[in-house]
Length: 389
Picture 1 (cartoon, rainbow, N blue to C red):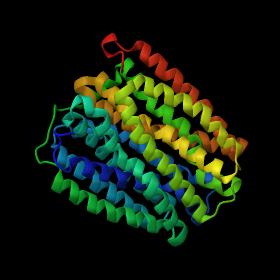
Picture 2 (cartoon, rainbow, N blue to C red; picture 1 turned 90 degrees about the vertical axis):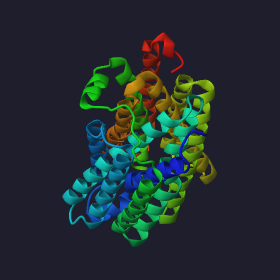
Picture 3 (tube, rainbow, N blue to C red; picture 1 turned 30 degrees about the vertical axis):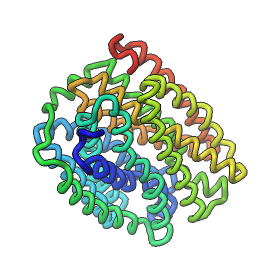
Picture 4 (spheres, helix red, strand yellow; picture 1 turned 180 degrees about the horizontal axis):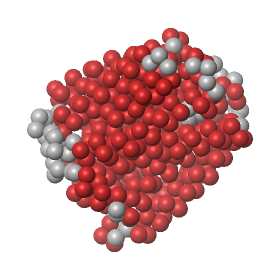
């Protein structure tokens, strides 16, 4: 990591922390938000789904349209736009206004996260790329430990709008840090809408990218509704839900660090296959809740560790497969993060409506089987020169 500008990775990781908190705090505030807006839990979940769908559509388009601009301008502009979305969410007078503000926030995040990853991947030494990407992505996982539980506590204590005010303030600080630390004039090979079309037409590459949506989609079937699941099945209150989310976040951080090391040591394919198998084994255990508290803590930690360990390996694999089109591939991969969240949230809502909260774990485990099939087929179709990818 010696060739990277001083302070660049902490700043990019910090920006991802703010985005992770602002994107996913809805999961921890679903109860207060639903009660305040008089919505059933399944319908309130669409606040997350709208964000995820908007990100999935807008991120690749915006990254391609801004391919000729300096990277500092793009990342800073994305961070500022995300802040405007958080501000709009805090001030939203209705559900419709809240959904519109979430779309604005998704556009900002869709610029910031993939461009930050592309910058880090391009500047890092090849042998350290997995670890560098893991540190950049670390901000999103640390948000699971601190940001999302803190947002949940604020929402339960002061109201869900207060949590969005906090995110808006953090966005201002992050935007200033990006402008001060990210080097001016930093640019790489320009990407265009034509590059986006080329990647979309590449069936092998798109299959590799789609793994992200399928893997995370399976996880978000139960994760989107974790707060009501904990309230009803474990009998937890505000502090209990916050603590459980913190345990999930600690698992996410541990998994993120482990995933980067595993990817560099075992190769991306073996890492992703192993993690998919672990999800098939672990998620159905969520359907056994309530469990004794120590067992539940271990389950939440292990589930999230196995879930968040995938990102460094997946991004490393896509950089190897995409070559010069890596920025577009990474933006599509980031879109798949939220596309998977949207799919998982929608499926989870249907499962809750039809079969109840206790069926979420089994449904998530079934989805992870599809992730195994996807990575195996993708690996089989990968050119020999990228056989380890």
